[in-house]
Amino acid sequence: METNTYPIVRSMHTDWLSEDLKKKCPYLMKYTNPVRYSPRKIIGRDQEMLRLAAILSAPELCNACLIGEAGSGKTMLVQGVMEKDTDRSYLEINLAKMIADFSPVTLGNSLTQLFGEVDVFKRITDRELVLFVDEFHQIVQLSAPAVEAMKPLLADSGTRGVKVIAATTFDEFRQYILPNKPLVERFQRLNLGQPGREMVVAILKGMAKQYGVASHQYNNSLYEMIYEYTNRYIPSSSQPRKSIRILDAMVGWHNAAKRRLDVRLLADVIQQSEGINIAFKADATKIKKYLDDHVYAQSYATLSISNRMHIAVADLNDKSKPMSTFLFTGSTGVGKTEMAKQLAKILFRDSTDQYDQNQSSNRHFIRFDMSEYARPESVDHFRKEISARIWERPFSVVLLDEIEKASAEVTRELLQVIDDGRLSDENGRQVVFTNCYIIITTNAGSEIYKNLAAFTNDISGGRAEVLDKERAESEGLIQYIKLIKESITTTTADNKFPPELLGRIDCIVPFQPLSEDTKMRIIGNKMDNLIYEVLKKHNKKLKMSNKIPEFIVKDNLDRDPDQGGARAAVAKFEEQVVARVARCINENPNAIEINVRISGDMAFENKTQLKSAACIHVNAIYN
Image (tube, rainbow, N blue to C red; front, side, top):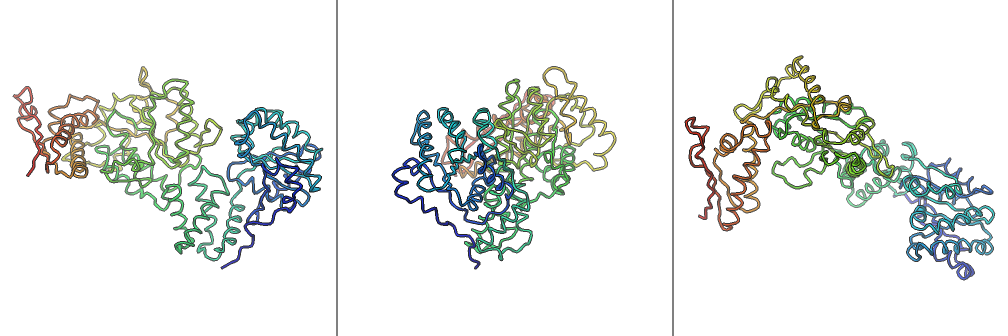
């Protein structure tokens, strides 16, 4: 086992234990702590440390404001400068304790008291003092009197021999500190960007040596892969913290369960911490078959999607944009939303159990009803919502449903997402969409879909006929796509697709109207689900007549109620069958079986019969 090169805690300045300090500097003693030395060797940031040392040595403007994302190494930078600085004492103000002990009004007086003890501290220790204030924006945010009290103290810092190092993030600096110009002018800014690959890899190697596991990694490129995977799969955190956190977790598994430090463990740790299964990769050759099995009678749609998905799965897509951007067009109720849900399942290995109703089965599926953003002033709400949800789930299928109902301002926000693969939230934070699949749906131009059957096949004999590749790529179908583009952009009134989005779409996917046979197949699937649910939740068998799909679709459904969609058929099934089965279960809790049958002739079976004589009967069986 390798020994730790750098002890966890090194000795503090003995001056801090002086009785004189305890008596004469009560505020410094109570509300500051010595800055601890780094528990490991500080690697990189040489230029930044040199710049910070130069700022602290300036005769007048000697206060520094470190600006960087959480985890970028602001505290480590202070520790690195302190290790080489033998002439000053470094204390960190316990801001949380001060905020807890003082009101916003009295916080300014307390800071004045604290700074007033600096002269006493210098006389006792014969050392200059550096005060480190992490989360400095909290002072500005919570107490205007405290800010006003600090301005003269900061202005006199050079002559008094007390330096201040403030630390904050880019967002907080922009929101709280930057508007106060006099305060900003009393600091020299030092921006800390995220370190590059070489620096992060060097840090990880140093940590592995410190942890005593440097000889236990079985792949020379493991540290590079940690850097690459954390950048790709954990975009919401900063380097080097996210890489350090993942390596730390891997070492924990190595020590506790003797796991090898390899790529498989790396994948497991990221999955456990972020919920992203990076070891899984969708099989592009099976996407079409899977979609055909779960979304009925949309052969051309599934072919178009699978062709585009080959590019994304092969990692040949443009990395500066979303993985793919689709436009799903067609009448309501033909399977556009269901297709998006099934894509999320196959791409991110969400549950593919057709009976799984748990919300976790769609954890990588994000849906926005664009009719909620119809007003021009809703653009800020949309930006806030989409950026927050993608920040939490950067690997997602994002469904923007009925885009034609959104305001023009919201559409312009989408242009930035599709073009640049990123969007700034309300605080200026960059949210990345490059790991998302964007699906936009529209009902605009739905009247043209009555002719789509001329180019595609529907359900026949209960099975989907898949279009062959040659026919899908034929000139006639390409010309039909042009008609779709023209139709959805020239539709009058409010049901009009924003034409400026068309040029940004990777793939336009038309959905054809559903035939009666397809609707009956969907009802059959709903029957299977209902049988499973009744058995699982109530431990009762459910037997149903095989004539129910015909009864619902052919005998009970209005002609073309939703322009070829299945929603009306499903609603009728719930009204005529599910509601009656539920009532029977509630009224007969001790029954062992529920029987659903149809009696009487259906009108479509007897052309001489003007009105259907068929009706549904639901009975409970006890023995």
